[in-house]
Length: 251
Image (cartoon, rainbow, N blue to C red):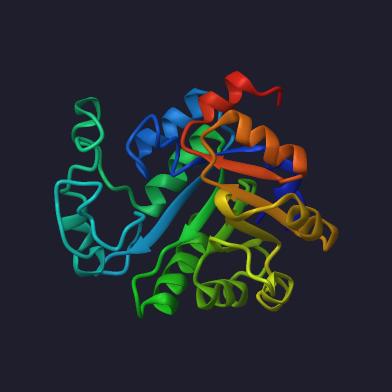
């Protein structure tokens, strides 16, 4: 596995959100391919598990928003999940696009040479089983030379991943930066803090960087705002539209 130092030395300033989800249906192989096509080098995607314990790329607990189905993904088998159309909601151009497995996404990422920020999105009450399955699959087939960072809003998932695969760097996800951010990052052995763009100030950026942590800000779709954050010292911004950033910023 790529070490923490190696990951962050290779991490670019622009990371594609759920692939390049402003340009293709989120968390699909098409979105990963679109991200690579426009020059993105690292992407963020979400992972959860099916009823039969297969890791799949999906953000919401319910499949309704991004497919032609409905209901909790945890109550669906992989066969049922992969019968869904996860592309038509975005555009007819993507009709028939599937919800990929983590294995399928990994193969595509390796083919495209895309580094990954993988966010664990466990269904309520399934934090540990979800994390255990994701860890098992990563140990089975993740390419050793492909950059990988695990992040989550769920602290139990971060602790469990640290126990199972301690060498993979981890990121602590939050909306607003909590007052005790340094204690939380230290206790969970996280290397980075990932926060929402509305709630970050320049003073906070300076403090986090001074303490030796990395800072990623999401979801930034305005190049001028991205330029501001990067000027403050933010390590990377996560965006739905990497193409906008590449066109406007001197990176």
